Amino acid sequence: MPRGRPGEFATAPHLALRPASGEYRPFNAGHPPPAHHRREDGGSRRPGEDGGPPLGLLPGSPYPAAHGRPALGDSLLLCSDGLVEVPGQDIEAGIGRLPAAAEPVLRVPHASGGAAGHPAGRVLRAVARDVADDRTLVMVRRLGPPFTT
Image 1 (cartoon, rainbow, N blue to C red):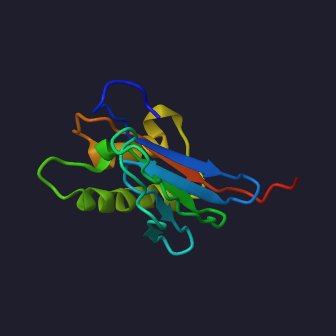
Image 2 (image 1 turned 135 degrees about the vertical axis):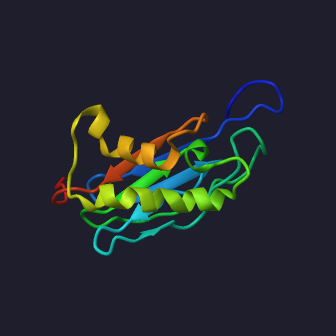
């Protein structure tokens, strides 16, 4: 829990991930829900719960988690609200822009190429080029054969 004066709060996404199985559980405190991009059909979905309020806003609030297991080649997208929120527009429109902007990048089996060509950087520029707010994007892709333990 954040410490500070009454009325202070913080937002945070959290992803619990088991690399060996690919299983994940996202927790959200005031951020948009993650998107699960399916490489097989190019579609995206938002798994399960939307999460809870910002930390410190409503003490004792539950933070339900969705769960899932991406197939090989699938990706998870977690972002801050600053990436998808545009003043005067419904945040759902911004949340919908993220998977659409990410799809061309995620369709490629594996991409890199320095900071300017980094896949997350290309998505950030496509979704929120002129945004003055925080713009955070975490892209997690499940690659290769499962690990053995």
